[in-house]
Amino acid sequence: MAPAHRIAAGTAAAAVCAASLAGCSTGDDARQGVPGPEKAQPAAPAPQSVVRLIGDGSTAYTGAQPQLPRPERLKPGQKPPQFVVFSWDGAGEDSQKLFSHFRAVAKANNATMTYFLSGVYMLPDHKRDLYRPPQHSPGRSDIGFNDEEGIAATVRQLRLAWLEGNEIGTHFNGHFCGSGGGVGEWSVEEWKDEITQAKRFVKSWKSTTGMTKAAPLPFDYDKELIGARTPCLEGRKNFMKAARELGFRYDSSGVNNQLWPAKKGGLWDLSMQLVPFPGHSYEQLTMDYNFMVNQSGTATQGDPAKHDFWGDQMRDGLLAGFRRAYDGNRAPLIIGNHFESWNGGTYMRAVEDVVEAVCNKPDVRCVSFRQLADWLDAQDPATLQKLRTLDVGEPPKEGWASFLSASPAPAPKGVPGAPAVRQ
Image (cartoon, rainbow, N blue to C red; front, side, top):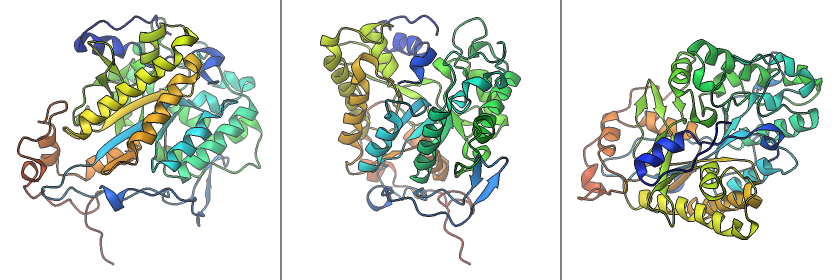
């Protein structure tokens, strides 16, 4: 992990520093640790009628993903929904059972989420040499590997999460940050190799663990994987070039203000954002790690007497950012987290509080990045361009009905939001 530094006062300074502070976990600790009716309602996963095993049977094609709503174009004068994305870096299930816990939290609050899976969490430690990280020796990983029990638990959560409409992205493999072979120094070809390996570990967990009779993951990962967040938000430039060539649709590795997204380098830029930091004059990145660093430094277990206060500070900052968008420009709010127990688990409690506070509000859709990208792709580009003219927290002066009164161009046939083709 690159050395962490406290974010200096001022939004501009916060943006610069936040980019170097995003979500670093190392060693074994990383493993421990349209409004109204159009909102998808969680339900028991429907049985899949088609099962076609892929490769060694670690993954399978089982048909279209359940619980995935069809996006629709905004109607003339319609106020945009308020999207909120909760995402998890290095997702995996361990003894803390935070993956399964937040699956339950999401289901109870009409939410779906994005889980950025670390590929090495699907590779048992005794097969670690199968990982050939760019610029490092075989079998090296700054977040370790897994054991068969952990892989079986993670597979179960991934399977259920996907069936419930959640997205499985990638956080790549070894989580190398900083100098000396960190992801910020990788070439486009090295990024392609890292992505290929991350996919391979997901597509071959049965072979590497020997659990050949276990049920497969119910998706084709080559098609499922459409986006990522880089370790420590480093190496984004070359990663995006590799991702575009590999057919990815979005990236969440930057630092943005609360504005409507645009495409960057051919990908939707769905980066985390800066929100108010209660008690400070500068803003804070919407990630648990960054709140922690600005509260207890790099000590993951700071003063216990301050744990509740620090969690409240994160919760209140995220809620302030939410209100600013909800009552303002309606820009999607992007939040990033880790399955960790930093500072007594106070950030997990804060995230759960935010989910419960916002996801059941009128016009709010707590969705995965895939669902947000689908909705953005379904809109008239001219409508999105107009939305991007609104500043942070700025509602249309003339009201939404007048601001978006022009009829959007019809969606081309075959794209999200287009009229269904009648047979």
